[in-house]
Each structure stands twice: as C-alpha cells, then as structure tokens.
Length: 131
Image (tube, rainbow, N blue to C red):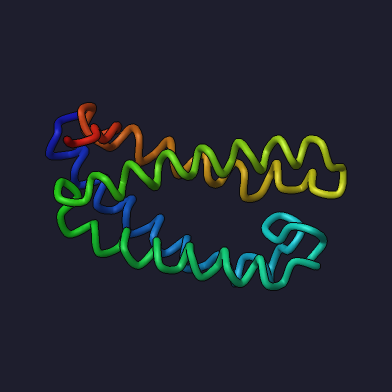
C-alpha cells in the first residue's frame, strides 16, 4: 500500500475511532456487561472513563486533518489502548464476573491499536524522547 493511500485510510480511521470513543457511554448503556466494569457499581468510574475517551475522541477527529502533525497523539492512542486492553484482559480472566469484557472492550481496544499501527508510517509508531 502506498504512503498516500495509508494516510488516506489513517485519516478515515482516526475519525471512526474518534466517533467510537465518543460512543463509549451509549455502548455502556446498550451492552453494560461488555463495557461497564464492576457490575455497574462503579458509576463514578464509568463517567470518568467516558469523559477521558470523549476528549480523546474529539482530539483524534481533529488529528485526522493532519496526522503527521499529531503522531504523538496517534502513538499515545495505540500504546494506551494496548496497555488498557492488557490490564482489562488480565482482570477479566481472573474475575469470572468480568469475562464478557473479553468479547467487548478488550478486543475493541486491540483492534483500534492494530488498525492505527498498520496505517501509521513505520517511523512514527514510537515517539522518541527529545533532549
């Protein structure tokens, strides 16, 4: 795939992921066992996560205009999604009441990370620290 084609698809993916992140709250209402943790007891936690993902979603949609200037945000989204999914996956495996997350938010975050990884230019998947 050419770099121009990858960038075109990356722009589309950033908008789609941004919209999905804006939909975390409705997804939790429609399918709570796949998106809300602690049997719905953590209402404050869920509101906080929805707020964080809504802000990230808005920034990802804005980043779609010029992905090259927003590579650190894209890299953050990739790696934070992998870490978030890994932690949730381990917790869901160890808590039988949370197993449904293994077919809900855990694979969704891994899919998002994979799509953004594949579409990002190779040199921009990792952000180097600057001195």
